[in-house]
Image (cartoon, rainbow, N blue to C red; front, top):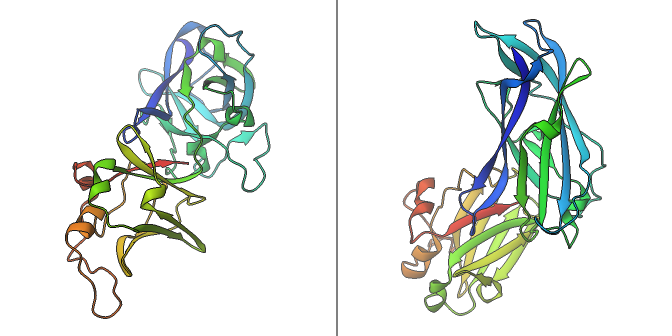
Length: 304
């Protein structure tokens, strides 16, 4: 069979405006030139990630790709068709060339998905194997695009050079470190004067007034800095001395799984009710997560 090549297709953030590339999906094909080094017996193998930042897509002298990191695993030809299968270590980690940034310094990450018919041992989305940390060059003020390529080595020998595989082009949006919430700015007329939004995660608490939200493309955006990761998040709206719970113990680490709303902000504005005991909003039932797709419900965007 032919040598193995890697395909790297973009993953789109369906909730971003405009659409953003949030990561890439890796798959394997065996139609490269030459004979593959893979055999029916398992062999040590590794994926090598390379990248480069660019200020412009065209009209700029291309920088050289630099290795970002390596992901060890094993590979074999499986089944009657001798299809390549890459075995991931669910507890493994990407071995980076660059040390992580100091605490509090921003970094960019891309979500990694793996085609399940080509990869085994795919870990949960919370695993470090599913997040590719981009080097510090991706956070430079002049960086507008970042290209990511992948190479494959089998038993220490290069099987698929990154130059012969797909390149993932990632337009770099303005770097936000934390939780971003969006609402239609048409709500401005209905929002009571002095409304504030409070987000709590562990010992971190962030408070923003409605007026402090920036407006982009008809949306009012709120960035709650350093609200990141899988720890439970609570969201409250403070209106005229009353506290209304919008989220309770929600996980924001999976952008494609929107939080469940105890109550939407629109409902708080139109139907204020309070508990006789604490003044906190009392919901009759949790709203389904998919309700965030409804026009009257705020859209949430997580950019970590």
